[in-house]
Image (cartoon, rainbow, N blue to C red; front, top):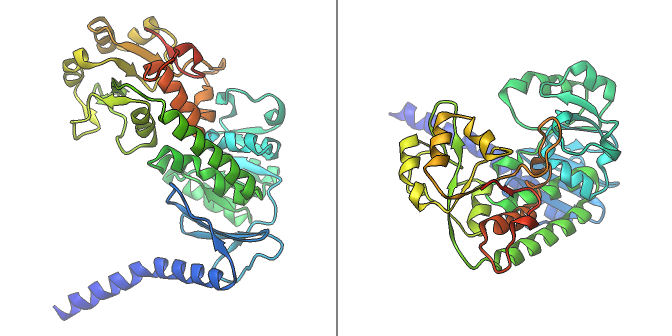
Length: 360
């Protein structure tokens, strides 16, 4: 019993070490006169600033940038000296680079062919595909590698870091609130030396989001999700940022009483009469295109009268939708789109939507 108690104590002690070190770093920065940015929605970062000097923690790692940013306050601080050459693996963050007029700093980008618009400042960026080649990364001589966490790429990321290139994970998709995802532009602003500009842009987005949300007057019963390869219906996660935008646009999930993300096709058919609008997260170009996807979808469409909208209004020849390049970082624009197609505010008009088009 005594041995078990000792092991339990050691386990608790070691699990508290990271948070204890984090708090120690933060207290030391405050003693040095650094102010802390107060996150409004995001929960994955902490930013401290003093004049032009910045110090921030992201996913357990500490970074610094600025002419006099302290390099020895916390253990293993990664100093960002410049950000003139960036590798970006996730296009959902691309909008922030464009907002800050820094798209020209991207020298390599993941799956470039699926980016809706690569004209202008992105034309010279190398397409790195889904699994980049280490030799290509070396040749590009990046200052920062912005990726997304994947167990499959762990070995690759280790090789990149051995080259002296900071590998940064900005997992924006983990944020449960759409404005928490939008707030990720501040951490990007810190890395890119444009924190104040990124902050101003974020505050404008918050203001716009609240303005559009206040316009909503009606509710609509919404069917969310799509048919999975297994034959089950895959719901949109109620804890996701997208689910929250749908809710703020006046959408009510007709499958909300279901405790599982995968539900039977029969369950979906039983809800058909209650549905006002189906919002599949697939860029179907037409009703015929949708019905060809599977026999079940053909039955679903024929046995219903609800409206159907997809984000397929702006798509390039390779199937790349502008929706993924912009909407994730601009939840205010996404909210506006959904209000138009749901017709949940006075004067709503589906023709005003930027990405969503009504198929029926």
